[in-house]
View 1 (cartoon, one colour):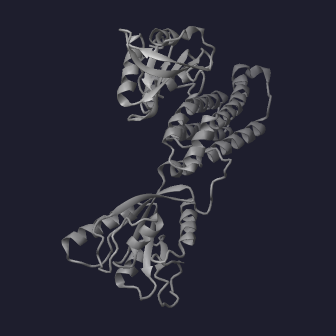
View 2: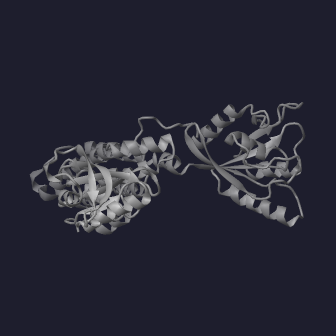
View 3: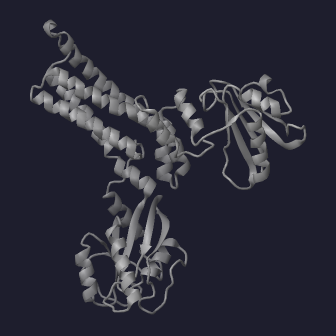
Length: 444
């Protein structure tokens, strides 16, 4: 199937100014030449040409711009052609149908990127970064995906591989030539090298927490008694009237949620039913859902009314969620200083929100914002493979300390190297590749 010439629409579905049909394979120029008014095979690489696409019967389908990329100089590494036509759904499908009629095959999900990987244009980590770049919804996720696409993760993984390879070579020399008394490094020096390598691997693995936050974001659950201003605070944070606000306690009966960005970081904010003792069946169900949302959130925000004493329900709430962020609302009204420390705000006047947002970010990151130059793991697959490699290195370290035979140490090191190789794709099966690229867009 790698000898097939493939084609697909590379732009999003729907109507727009232009659409792009991508063609790649050994016969890409021949396919394009059959349907285009110009001599495609004579064009220099990376040149654009205005012309017309004709049906098999010779009628005009569209006037287009055609971009040519020669073998070895395209994304896939193959002959490639991109046809930029008018962006209507019907005309785009007509052009694609004509391309397929001329001898191309419809591409599968991610097949262009799969070919780029198999033709050594990118490694597997870079290929996965393509999809993450497309899916990025905030600056942090975009930066992490861009770093990975530029090969920064791959360079670090290859450095770790080289360290382990050097150590493995020395140990295997001991195994193969025990009578020679070879000692390119002492056991103490090798142990020191192994510990340093493990520390570098653990440091990389620890960035996965950040990577998850970049892509998934964090969930915030807003709790409090009825009428303390939860819906007003949600509206203030979103800067829009999302939740209904009234003076009637118990207005919010179900959990509402909205996406928001705080300092470039994605959050999902849940506004919940006010917690109080009630026999009203709908309100009881809302309170049950409130507790479920709180238990599954990354950070609970408890909103309190600074103008009145705590109720017994609120005291129980503070005991139930001792790690919650305490927020005192209604500071625009007469009040005394509360006994319990917390962030003071006025949701109505939108004061104190900057301090609140800063505290939310600090709590989520545990006062440890990621370094801008940090290489961040964002894929569960990479994290799992790296941990397997760490386990193997740790076994070798313990083996050194316990005088385990060198052949067993070499075996564990080879296992670690295989785990690292799977991150960048030098040791993966076709099944794994199929599962990875099946998640891609058809035209990518």
